[in-house]
Length: 257
Image 1 (cartoon, rainbow, N blue to C red):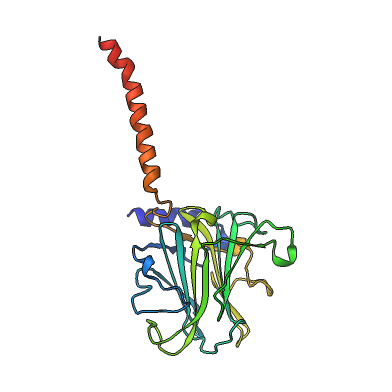
Image 2 (cartoon, rainbow, N blue to C red; image 1 turned 30 degrees about the horizontal axis):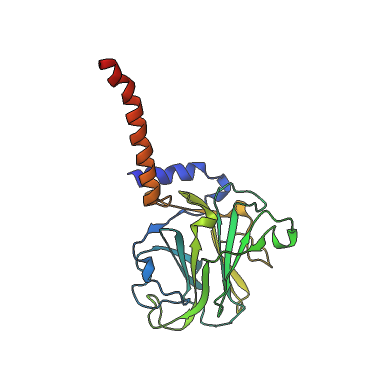
């Protein structure tokens, strides 16, 4: 019931132009430490505990898997029907807007993460740059970010035929711990010269493959577990509350004497 209410609130808050999609509920997963980052399905159950979202169309089958645990968001883009393995040209990009403000131009709260097929070194882009040719994004670095473009095959849940796939490990330290983010996914197939997107059929920049933030969709945590309370912070919080209770009780105790 709470999940349904939360989803209704999100839908009511969205601009009218954004109703062509459903927001993605991101799953909390306790087994993300078992993920082998090699750009592919490494074993059959590797991405089982994650949200499944279908992308593409009748000619392009793309499975988007998303999950979060501790300090990271995990994403797999499984382009099941792309059997033309064009290394360094095929690519995928994931974007988050931590404020979900639907701005026409990117700002400092917009982050994009990209990787090409065959690459073990992804790139991070942050909005708010003065360089208009790159949609106001500039390249930044974070040591804990991982993105690999690989080839899924015999262990894939959807097809054993070798095809392109992309794995991402995105630090929450960069994008912040929010219940709702603006969200965009782009997958470029160089063989057909087509960029498939989520939300579907939105205009993208030819050079960056990024849509403007006002066209992005939403990804949300239905149980509000993304802003997870770390244990040390929880201890400090309870300590402060306990101290305040003692302080407030002291005058009352003195009055009883």
